[in-house]
Length: 142
Ligand code: CDP
Ligand code: MG
Figure 1 (cartoon, rainbow, N blue to C red):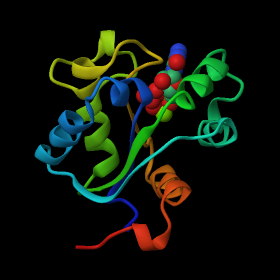
Figure 2 (cartoon, rainbow, N blue to C red; figure 1 turned 120 degrees about the horizontal axis):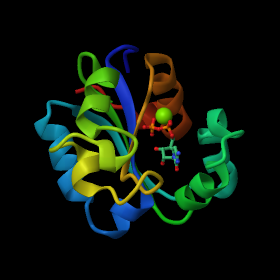
Figure 3 (tube, protein in one colour; figure 1 turned 90 degrees about the horizontal axis):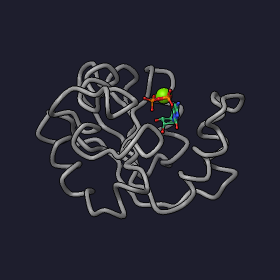
Figure 4 (cartoon, protein in one colour; figure 1 turned 45 degrees about the vertical axis):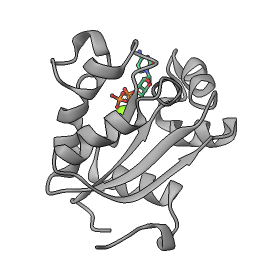
């Protein structure tokens, strides 16, 4: 796993419940990202709170944590040159109403909280988030 070449994504509970996992992973692979770690998991409240710790003082924090623990998520480490920036472009704006046509959030998100997918916001956070979910054995090179 190389810093600068990876990002961490999570398909959020609503998108999983609505059976969009396959379509979203297809979008990701077709955009040139290589999946080097992949799993389904459900975060207990404490884990969701730690994952979104930077937002702990925001008005939307409780709703966000309750949503993220509400069902299984599909988490993946993705590899590509400029992974963080290119992936943020692929998913679109946080609020799907403002997301560009063809972006994952435009296609699959319901609203700003239930916005289908997460993407890391920096190379540092991508590495941190990858280790948050995946042990060394579950991070692949191929
Ligand atoms: O996910 P992204 O990096 O685009 O946005 P963020 O500002 O890091 O916010 C994290 C998550 O909090 C978003 O993806 C939304 O699910 C949620 N959020 C929300 O529910 N209401 C807001 N006003 C802003 C964010
Ligand atoms: Mg963010």
